[in-house]
Length: 504
Image (tube, rainbow, N blue to C red):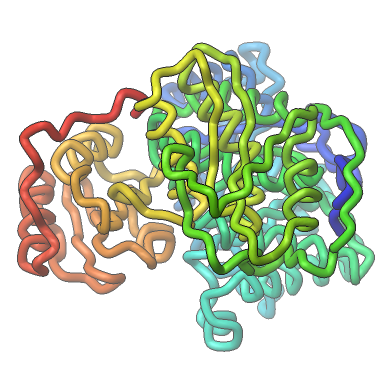
């Protein structure tokens, strides 16, 4: 599956999404998703055009009901009338009939196997519409919304995600329909990376070459959201996996596009050949620590126990992997690379994209960002965020925050900022901040607490995946969240000098 010695892009057959073709030798395409109400045609058209102007050739909109599904025809017509060739994608969850409506007017329809029965003839009817109109289909598996049948059989695992997708891909092949894209998204970067790699292996075994859409769901905002996205997406791009990318940030959708473009550009070419002499030590589809003696550290904590493996080539990921697999398994190791950019966000994105794979695979025990243009406190903060995004060391509050879409029931951007201001001093707490109940409860399943839109400007609070209080007015909800944390004995008062780190 993976070429361990260097960079080689995975082959995928071509799929046309409107005027944008992905797969084969076509460039990796970036995309985003609107957060305007889809039924508001004018607002949706304006936002699509802002996203397109930012450089995304593909834009997705939610279609949660028939009204939204019908609005897609007017939206597509208006965008075309304004001279934009942007590919329009409909996002469908619970209502297959809406997928049929949307497929008549958009360039691609995304369905979630967890919410779309594959034994009822629904897929066959949808495929016939897509075939007639030249509409592509995305089989979009979300870690947090696997069907009960899959969870009962496989648990909440990457293996369950893969089998969920493969059932639908086999049906598409039986129907001789190959205009299909697949995604395996999760807010957990380790689950996300392992799920994509397992899917590639499964498809290769069955002779499938469908292109892949990459994304880390609910990454959050600011530099932390960018780092989390870069860790997961970068680990796959580094091995040539991926044909289209979305960086999901809890920010205005057009802000996602430059980040996605930067990641894609960063992996446009990866030079060098690095012989891997011990491939038997590598397990790309499950987490296995190379050395049990090390603990995840920043460069300030390095002592004589740690080997420092520095990458100097144009392909640091492959260089590190070869060197670390050749290292004595009893020797803990820190990966090091120099970054000369003066902008903290650029250093963070590049370092996260490079260092994510060795951390997610258990090969490295720490990171050393050699960045002479940045102050030491900023570098240390970036290193800690990378370790946390790779799920090897938690040093700050973890936020699982959705990017919002037309289903979002409150102002999630400002709410996330308020929650961060009041809880960011709780390093052992995970908080999910979700716009609605469609993906919210599932995607934040491993969060300690959840803040989920239940109705316009009303919130339901969760503890460990279970509902605690329903339909709280949003004006009271953050206070009630904090009361819940206090009642569980997990609250502590912030220190007087609890300042937000410089690069957040």
